[in-house]
Image (cartoon, rainbow, N blue to C red):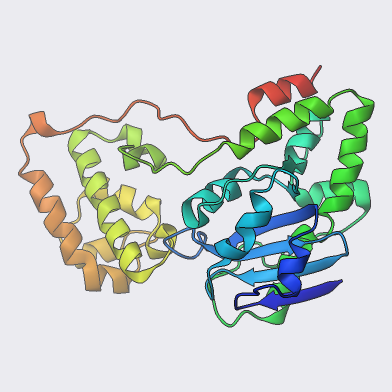
Length: 314
């Protein structure tokens, strides 16, 4: 397998010529597990000649290079579980796919129970897909060679998997269903969280009374502010469990705050007074101003659509 790591624009060069292919396998790596934002860090592209290109999205504007191919309806773009990546392409690069074939959606239509890429590659191609860097920090630079090789594996076998699944879909008369599901996926766009109450994502929050819920909202906002400043994922600042306990038990000092499980003593000492000041304001708030636990919020799709899964069961 040939792997090329690209850190600068390739105007009319080998990458540009490769992207003129009628078929592209595509994947993205983002930094949401480690960083505050899920920004695109890498774009992996494999072409039918078995060459893989790793584009450093933090080094140059990759959208200008990718847009002509990805928005060309004559180019098939093979992806696996494209839902979130399509949202990132929209938000970060303003790119909207037109020729998607999603291997995860195809597998769902065939009734596969394990829809992860590693499971499908091992089951159908006998390929073992290592998970060593599954939660790596893709925003780190320079990237070690083993991380670059790992990223390349995500697209290396997609053509073979897509061809196998497509043949099975055609044999079952379901290829039109796969094309429809891919078309629906292409229409997904990034949507901000809007006014969703953050406490709805915290296990155990619904058991709190109104004032404790208000403290939890303040604690979550406090954590968000710190995470944004440090460009760290929320849970890497402090976990939900510690904030839930702080909201319920109402610490009166940074020393007491530091004793909660999951609360870093350093964080409690350096930023704890800010949190306690927020709690003081909540304590002074009239009871009628306290908001109850929110109604259930709808969640985005994490699997292929319900219609696709129902069809697969027929």
